[in-house]
Length: 436
Ligand SMILES: Nc1ncnc2c1ncn2[C@@H]1O[C@H](COP(=O)(O)OP(=O)(O)OP(=O)(O)O)[C@@H](O)[C@H]1O
Ligand SMILES: CC(=O)C(=O)O
Image (tube, rainbow, N blue to C red):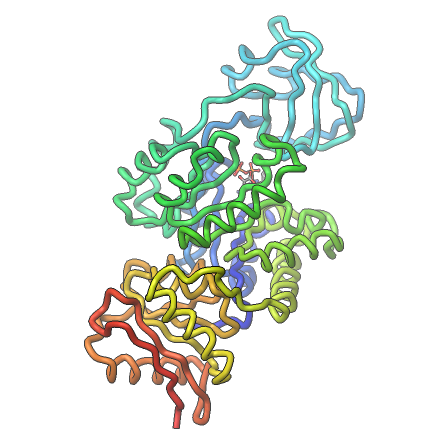
C-alpha cells in the first residue's frame, strides 16, 4: 500500500498525449479513465495499465460526435458544410433546423445554421478548432440515458474487469439498473450528472450509484454556465448525505491544454471544490490531448497538497446515528492525540466513506473486503488493505499496528486511532493506540 501525502484523489483520462508516458502518469494519479467515446484501443490501454491502478471505463451515451479524424481550424464568419467537410452521424441531419445554434465540444465553438436542404450549411460565430470526435450539441432535447450501443459496448468490455463504469447522461434509476444487469455489481457505477432531467431525479440516482460525477462540460451546455456552481454544491452535499464519493470533472486545468502553467481562476476553483468536499478530481483534455499532460498531473498534485493544508474538519450539523457519533469521536480524538493515521475495519466500505466525508487530516487506512479494495480508494483520504474477517479487538489492534508501521505511516512513540464499522463482530469500538 503506497500512501500519498495528498488526500483528494486524481483521475486522468488516457489519450494520444499521455499514452506514451504511462509510467510517469501513474506516478502522479490514482485512477485512469478511458473515454469509450474516443477510444477503439481499449485493450491496448488496459494492457498498458497492467492493473497497476483502478480503471474507469466511461460509456459514450447518446451524444452526436464529429466523425472527422482531422483537426479543422475555423475562422469567425466561415461557412461550413455538414456532410461535406464536417461529418456527423446520418441521423443528426434530420434533427437540425434553419436558425439552430450548434455547439461544438463543451462550448468551444458555436455555429449558426443558415440553410437546411439536403445539406446543412452553417456559419462559425467565432474562431475555433474542431478536434476529431468532439461532441456536437443541438438546442433541442436529445434521447437521454443509457443507449443500446452503451449496453452492447458494456457487454464487450466486462472481460477487462473494470473497477468503475461511467454512465453518461444518466437520467433515472432505470439507467443504472440496466447497467447493473450487465455488470452484476462487479464494477462500481459512476453516474455522470450532466443533464437537466437527472437533476430532478438526483436523490434516487445517488442512492443507486456508487459514485457521482459533476460532469461540468455537458452540464454547462444544458443548464447554463451561471448555474453550475450551485449544482456543484448541491451534488457534493448530496454525496455527503448519501455517503457516495463525488468526482469533480471538466476544465479543471483547461488552460494547461496549451500552457505549461494554470491560470489563477483554475487554482481557486480547485481550492473551492476541495473545501466543499469533492473526493476526486478528473483531468480530461489536459491529459488526453493536451500539450502538457504530465505537467498537468504534477501541478494538480502540488495544488491539492497545498490546498489541503488549509482544510478544516467538517463538524456535522447533526449527528444522525450512534455509528456516526463513533466516527465523529474518532475524528476529534485524532486532533487531540495527534495520531498519525486512522484505521477502520470496514469490510463493506460504508464506514470508511462515512469517516472520509468528515475530512480527517490524516490518512484513513480501511481494512476491507477483497471486492472493494481497489474501488474504495477513489474516496478522499482512503487507502485500502484487503483483509480476511477479523474476529477480535486484539486482532484488529495488532493488524492496525503492523500495517501502519509497515506502510511508514507510524513508528514507535506515535499514536493511531482505531475504529470499526458497526456491522462487524468487533461491535461499537474506538481505541487510541500508542505504539510502544
Ligand atoms: N482516447 C482519446 N483519443 C483521442 N481524443 C481523446 C481521447 N480521449 C479524450 N479525447 C479528447 O479529449 C476531449 C476531452 O475529453 P473528454 O473525455 O472530456 O471528452 P468529452 O467528449 O468532452 O466527454 P464525454 O464523452 O464524457 O462527453 C475530447 O473531446 C476528445 O477530443
Ligand atoms: C466529463 C463529461 O462528460 C462532461 O463534463 O461533460
